[in-house]
Length: 130
Length: 262
Image 1 (cartoon, rainbow over the protein chains, first blue to last red):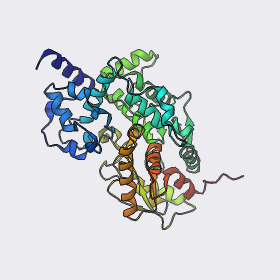
Image 2: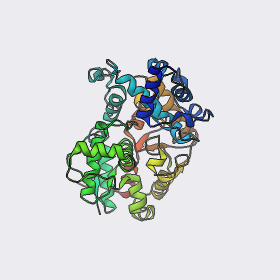
Image 3: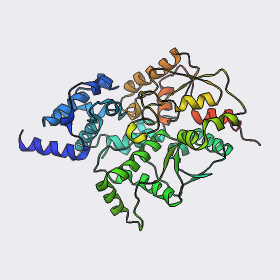
Image 4: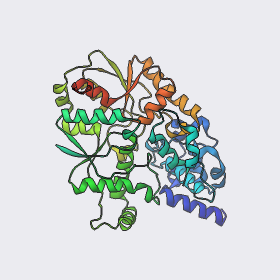
């Protein structure tokens, strides 16, 4: 693993507090993920790719934005790896880069309907903007 | 009994029913929900990263305010409860995080993570008791078949939320029974509605929400109850075959306080 990838892996582990080496590759996280069909990289791949330092493809993929933060993978992982926290850390690493915001308050009016709950707007801004 | 109350932004706006029926029902059960002063929006979702401090400060302030009054902190919205609970857990268990938070806040008395946090459902179960609620019911919802929809925020992460068994929860079913109705168990009651992703990928949330409402209908339910404004929005917007109401509305109806006496 080159130095840049090693640094990136360290950053992701620091942000998330997750140790991907605990994974025993059972695949339960991906099996239970409600966004599985929408993802290019699936939860078990996030874990493996962070472990091996192959993180740039994750940072460039849309997959992190398909995670619903439902924490099904966290609760159902038999090894307490907590894959959703890795996805969150990848998302933060991407959004903290210059120009990384996916959504700005100016984008919001286009999404509104009469029933849109405030909860949806604040949650989306928190997830898609640094 | 007086408890500190964190309503949250949605309950002051698009989910006024959830708030109003919660307060009225609590009063009927002998509990006054005292809104904490100058609360700020919880942010809707807990950022699961150890280096995010600012996004968690509103929860810490609410927790510290309740602690100061020596009252448990209650919220009704699933999202607020999830964020507050996870923040409190981090304050208790992550020393470095708690240090940074307290260092930033600069209050005379550092917050130590010891405020008691209840979701309204836990308040009903643990502080009031379902038996006592059963005694207070004046309009039993006899014969109604009701599907409780938990979604994800109330239950997970289970280690932190500690409300109920995340794979086989009972708390809302027990409440439904106490109100005289019949709970309907269905496979998708603890699966996600699509959450905030509905904003940029409505198709994903349509699939997730319809799976939930169809599953409830196929198991014989007449209506779905929830504690989460976003779950309700996603289910209704995506054409749920069943009506979706807040659990506090049913509670108020059964306790005879749904209509305000003129």
